[in-house]
Figure 1 (spheres, chains in turn green, purple):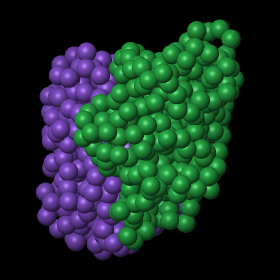
Figure 2 (tube, rainbow over the protein chains, first blue to last red):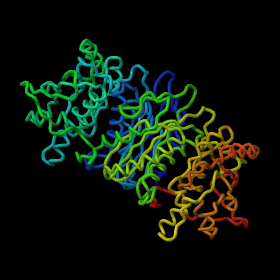
Figure 3 (cartoon, rainbow over the protein chains, first blue to last red):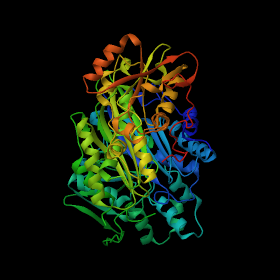
Figure 4 (tube, rainbow over the protein chains, first blue to last red):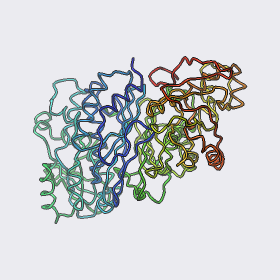
Length: 320
Length: 320
């Protein structure tokens, strides 16, 4: 059975690099050059089997997702990705599995020119922790505490698809491959995050669901929000598979794993935002507005209040 | 039971910070300022229960160790530590355990002025991944590939203590608290690593044992080494508890978890090195020399060749 050093060598041989990497995988630490005048943005996220992804997730999809969820955090800050490290805990030293994992991980790394500069492999229950690094100018970062009363609330793409895919997998019945693909291979909105610099005030990525994640923005900014459920951007597959609108709203509000961006901006900037998002092939939809007060109020198309049962994805609440 | 957000808030409330942290824990990413003219050094290491530490390890000791093993990697590069992220996977949302873990982690963070700038908590089998960041000037870093024929091979401190502590724990018999303390609370040689800038040629930290780790330096540098076993720096407790010198050499060569530094340097610099180490209260010992060829040759005090059975700690070989 191959040991740890063989696994590291296998990853190292394929690792992506870039010109600002002075020393990559293979020493005690990587040595990296941060451009003058830029802030370093750093984020870390762990995926645990059976908790953050279904046990039957394909290794290549898992590799993609482990990097995607981290790039999504950089996107929410408006940061341009540069480097990452990978800490991989595997039940067995399975090189076929590892190669497939690297296929998915490195495919996404190449899309965004991210160098894999360090890592650790160890034996244990399957778990992946990635730390990503990117750059953003001091004034360009979109923070959670910057929402202001009167801002419009936007989301990119469509929401609820990943939660729908997860719900179908949990039910073990007929399942939509398109919804499952959105669960397994989320698209980090890196270009959109960069395009929104100077336009988005507050921003966050939707990892735990719109209600919970927008809730973080509201709490940090000291404001409330009104969301119109009839405006939530909904994919064709989600509408087909979940025709009951109340069940669908629940998925869209409480379901995690969309990795779309939610951001706020002055209404006067709406046209500039649509143009900026269109330039990177991303749909943006206004779903509500920031109001004085606290918390989230939800309105159906009939103008009724909607009561949300769950408060969003909590990794200790046994969601997945 | 408290959820993920409560645990993160608990860590956030206590997190250390520093002046170069523009934005710490609580947003999608931390925003950090790297000093002009410095390289960023980044390293990541995972500790898995039962694999990298005994199951009965005290939570505070584990917190200390999780940061220490990462700071040790920066020390081996001669980098000054600055920031870290913490990804913590816990079987239960146990706030008493978490508080104790933070006690140990933050105690060591304060010693080295390390800011905790981000993290992730999730449910699953106990595992800790830390990513550390530090600074080093381009010419100051000690790389693995820089050993030259004729260099002396040094180690800091004493070696084999942690392996002795682990062996006693595995045997479940009488155990030395001093050896166990070395296993649970290793001292990262941060000051020594910085003091050795410009003096050490190649350097590595001893996480997997002298034979395996020095082996990495030899392979990267394309040289061999001769080690004199009679010179290995040995603590009083290790000599007392393991009087058989062959068993002790085995522990010192193959046992991991010492987190001392091993480095090479020209013999002419020996006095300067002793002075530099003495200034940070660290013992340094010459244990051999770099020779032409490849691999490690080991000599007993009688001049006999010593055959090492194990090749060092391999996390897939079921060591711990």
